[in-house]
Length: 79
Length: 315
Image 1 (cartoon, each protein chain N blue to C red):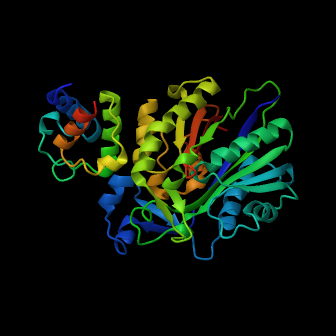
Image 2 (cartoon, rainbow over the protein chains, first blue to last red; image 1 turned 60 degrees about the horizontal axis):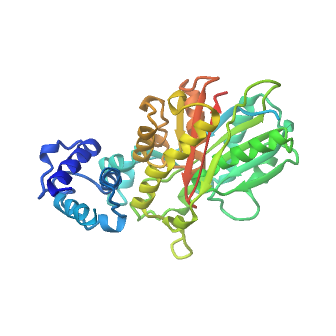
Image 3 (cartoon, rainbow over the protein chains, first blue to last red; image 1 turned 45 degrees about the vertical axis):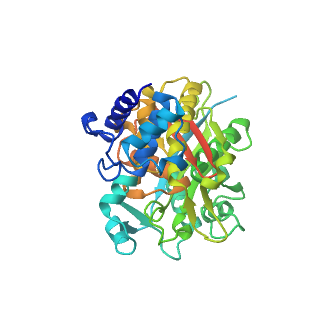
């Protein structure tokens, strides 16, 4: 899967869970500061990402994933 | 073997209301923050001298009165609680005595927030096998005895209260009113919700519990429906443990149960652990939100970690 495909999939997930329009989900966005996504929504996003990409994102890694690009990198590296 | 059924519910909440704004005066939080994270707007707190037994008695008396049974008919009392003031004596025997129930089997059961569903299953099995004729099942908690009021991740959630149900057998040929329980535990996650000697207060790993509850609990609820011979879409009401509104909504979404059928008692009651399900049931019954004769799905989950689910027929 290319980074572009992961980004598109992630944008769909974030739209569904947090109601953030997909076109606002760009690589440099910070979840908390730019997208107003809290720690519980991050868990929901991680669970949905596991279903979609088959990559587990444990809670201990979640706290280091601050931007959209961080998650794309994590999924890309693990898949 | 005959089936079992619930005859009546009863609930009790302490008088003192604590709003989010009240909490914001003593800990760094806000009404908006609490509503968005856990969905609680206000909660009830027991008076300093009000005990778990006092609240259990109040809820038990209401359920007993609503059942139309005399206290002498009850021969089993189970109190689900994880917050008694002392380990001995148990709460159940004291409550039974106060309610005028003579010499019943009486014990406390600790499965934390899953406690009421566990106790309901135990009572159901007891009346079905003839170990008891009628059982009084109570969930009662004074969670605020075990709160660190400076910990804003827990003090905003927990509260006090009690709820009760009277359980008996069904008549000859009548369908069962309490379905098979689906229950279990996950002791490998025991450290995610604890009270330790150091803190003497509840600590929880919010993200881990949220992940577990939103991924592992809907299959348990689904299995309880399957074992009762229905699908989740058939239930007229879904009463999950009132842990956190976002957990409740996530599980309901995964089960495909419409929001209007889902209990949201947490908004004004907070998380009362084992009391939350019977408290929600009794309030929904009072408000006319339960339709007698229809199936309702109960799902308890919490510290242990432990969980239990069953389908009941609304009395």
